[in-house]
Figure 1 (cartoon, each protein chain N blue to C red):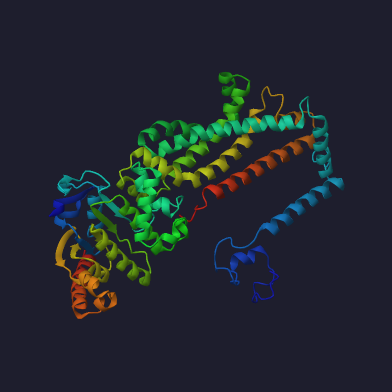
Figure 2 (cartoon, rainbow over the protein chains, first blue to last red; figure 1 turned 135 degrees about the vertical axis):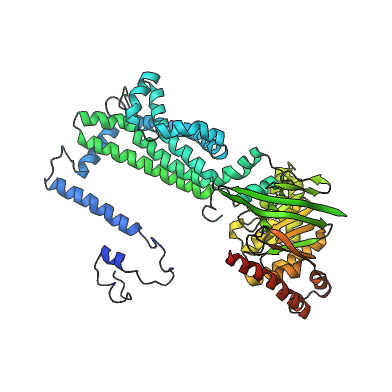
Length: 290
Length: 264
């Protein structure tokens, strides 16, 4: 909007709406009309700074009581305090370690079971016929709804917690792998069969590698679901974990710890997402170019 | 010596509430050793169906296809296919793509790389051995596909519009390259194209197909590829009076089929 070369009409700064009404002129080095073209990192940085400033402003100015929304410094203080002294008998790192173990344990289990299952469902009408009804039945149910059942069936120990998280990660993994089967072009499959490939060779050497981009996307979605379910999983009979920390802090109205816990969960999830994206670029550099 | 024999082959699909669609009706065709057979025709004439039958990707509703006396009942390494596109494996480099068929057949690494390098050399891909396939141009990608198809030493190469996605200049060069590969390897070729000029230039035998029902309407013997091997000048042959006269004759046949389609 501040580009002096922009022709009349689009440079008058009518805001976002004018962008919808009129296409922007082409700039050198850009292709006209590509959706979402351009840099967004700077805008995001500005938005983050603005949000934190707004947060600081309303809390320091006293518009909102610290009980409802503590100040940014209050949250940082809570972080340092928990890091120093732990929370309800467990150290900060132990809370992180326990939760990470639960989420990643469930995630790995969901990968080991979900990816072969999804591939099988994509490849075989029999497997699809068997597994489609149960998966489609449980998939839309919120994990909180079957948490009581998990506890009745699997007890209050680690097993029911990991299984609850696992159940929320499994569905996206299965669906992703199943959709990924369709990424293999029929020409690629025919080429393999022409060389005398067995069905198993086609799955291993053509279908599975072609499905990798979809599987990576499913991993990113799935691990997100896992963190979402963490708090529910740590609602019952937990003595440590980030979800447990957030829940019990909320019972004692320790709002700074609640917000700190949320930010820590978000930070770990974000870091892992970037790790997966990094691995993805290494493993499937051909994504979208094959 | 007869090598590939197609006898009384028909293909029809059942259509709900309508008479069945005849994709191919009563096809009889023989491809002999060192034949370069080109199939040409309006869209819907069943050329690709015929290729899929020979490859073993489809089964005929009636009739029989046999290669060297053995009835075709499914895909096999004696019939290699070069596809128009999308058939390379982007997670493998050029060398591994060419060696892919040998890997499936359980050859050890040394042997499959030695054979793959042989055909990489034949197709002029030596500098690209370690390249990713998606970094190559369309013409180079097709060379990789042809090299891969040759590694299993098939009796016949099935080419389904292999040059259809290439630009005009690359396409002419690729035609000459394929002819040389055909001459050097002595394989039978079944080649599908939409380009009349390409069909005339490359084939030793031209099969013109017509739609509704898909059938062979004309067969021509062609001299042009032999002339090319003698003179080495492709454009001169394509511009000769004999070539142009036959081209116009065949275009007339195909245009008549297309016009018939619009009367339906």
